[in-house]
Amino acid sequence: MLKLRNYLQDRWIEGEGVQTTLIDPATEREMATASAAGLDLGAALRHAREVGGPALRAMTFAERGALLMAMSRAIHAEREALIDMAMQNGGNTRGDAKFDLDGGTGTIAAYAKIGESLGDTRHWLDGDAETVMGGGSRMLGRHVRVPRRGVAIHINAYNFPAWGMLEKIACSFLAGMPVVTKPSSDTALVAHRIVEILVDSGVLPDGALGLVCGSAGDLLDHVGFQDVIAFTGSAKTGRIISSHPRVLETGARVNIEADSLNAAVLGPDVEVDSETFDLFMRDLVKEMTQKAGQKCTATRRVLATKERIGDVKARLAEELPGIAIGVPGEDRVRMGPVSGPRALADLKEKLAALREVGEIVYGDPDAVEVLGRDGAKGAFVSPLVLEVADARQAAPVHAVECFGPVTTLMPYDGTPEDAAAIVALGEGSLVTSFYSDDRDFSARFIEEVAPYQGRLLWGSQRVAGTAPFPGMVLPGFIHGGPGRAGGGEELGGMRGLELYTQRVAVEGFGPLLDRFFGA
Image (tube, rainbow, N blue to C red; front, side):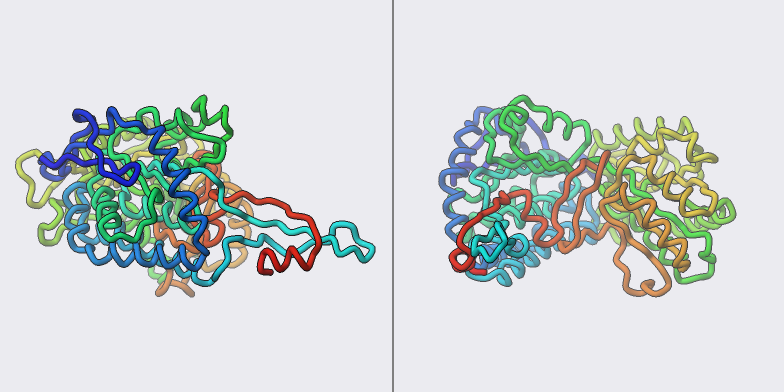
């Protein structure tokens, strides 16, 4: 059986024993093992700081952009083989695997273009020059962003082994900071192969990228004050990372993207036979079933007026049976399994909490028709829709993320204030989508709900033919959210580099500052 090696200090190293066995969640076939036991992770971080950091900082933004573009092309050249791997180790359909992989290479390419546009400089001017003294003084000040002198430790979730890893690397490399990346061991096969491709391509500067496939072990014990930790995963693990004694002692930066109880709101003006209602339903079905609902951006809560709840249920009952469930690669299959037995057990545990306050109105958690299944094997589950009568008396719906093809319908009184107040019960989300052609309703809803969101998507008749779905994380817009969503931010164009840079105010003789910083 394949044993995934770790790539540290510019060499491949096997960990001791077996910490994790990777499986195909559709067939339960064992595919590989992973371990990082016995490795000197402190030495790996020092190597990244001392070798990879200087190598990246010596490059201009344009050169770092060229590096990212070369990486994107090298990965894309192996696209078909990587898609096959994702279908097996992640239980993805081909479409879901493409979504993950193409999202990753596309994001790296987007940041390559940003690097090209910044040109032959190593500094990022943050705003205009400011007068220091006034009265005709030529003493000016500028805010400048420079790369931090540490290493970026990236800890990624199991659901997007390609995109989740590559979007973080894109921002870190362009900022001039080396990376040690830690994918979820359960689905590490794709991330491992991507790093193999990059190493074999010869495009990586020495020390720029490290990979830990097994347990993180004592990795955080070795962080320094110039280091950055970027984590995607559960809020519980995020709290453990943020409160780690070494992290608190050093003040290392931490960015958390965690659980998110995202919502979709149907405006009271939307008629069932309208393009806006069709857009709402398109997005809802997509967000429930893409990657078997295992997305941090998936829609967990659906708000509609009492007059429209029945219409939404009826439409879901029409459309969800068309989402054929089965072993990825089988004809007609549009949804695969969740990522494995542990994910399925966790889903059912969280579902039990939701069922205390809501009723299942579509699907059966214990019975599902599966195409191509071998007996009872595989972590398959039906799409599940619950309904609650009173959103304010259904606390678990706003506190428990059932990470799978599960959503809950709830009524609101038709006012933007009530809709926003119910959404806010989730205490922070990555994205809320709302659908309305009423400008007054929409303007008021945005104002009321915005403080609780990282991103808002406004669906309407005017954009029905061109709107992305809520789960489409674009490199030009921030990905993150307040409160329960972790309080962090990734991407957002140049904003994605802020985590990996230090902003410093430099005061001095204006013309020399301009010349030095290329203003």
